[in-house]
Image (cartoon, rainbow, N blue to C red; front, side, top):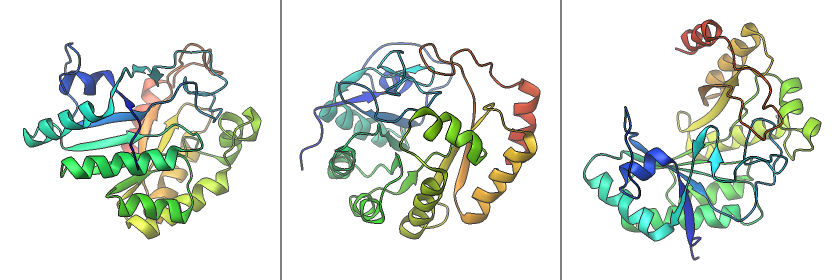
Length: 248
């Protein structure tokens, strides 16, 4: 299976790999890549500039720019920087489109063909068979992002409330299947602080994820121009710090 011709890299990753020039206060030790396609993601997440309902830039994810490069050149440079111990892991993030699992599988196989760098993939809910395809292609970790702390907020920002393809129960089903395939400690989810939840609700979902064996990674909501939530404020810093402490 041929990998896609192009792939996006976060601007920090592109600098570390020598694909572009720039200065950073702290260089990433994970190479963050993003599947490339013309057009937007088929999901409708209200906070994401990649959403099909966003009028924002197609080269942005969160507040970071992701320029596109030739895939094989990127992977070659990932292996080089891994050998130099500047990159310790590669994380491939996936848009939602029909052939995404084929692309992710081919990309993982290409990475393993050239390098021993550990591979993580962040993707939408997949079937058990698709998760197994990624596992046998050499993927070590997988992430499926809940983003929201409650089902009501989930529906409002990435489910039926915005015409999205996702369901709360569907995400949890995939997380449980991923834990069966990859093992406890090798599955991650993302949670965004500041989508309208209470601190108590957020702490409860943290505990739910930890109890089931999925590591929850925290993010503070950031309003991005062109998204449905572009006018919403970020969370108060003090609240975010309390939830970071609860996570710890």
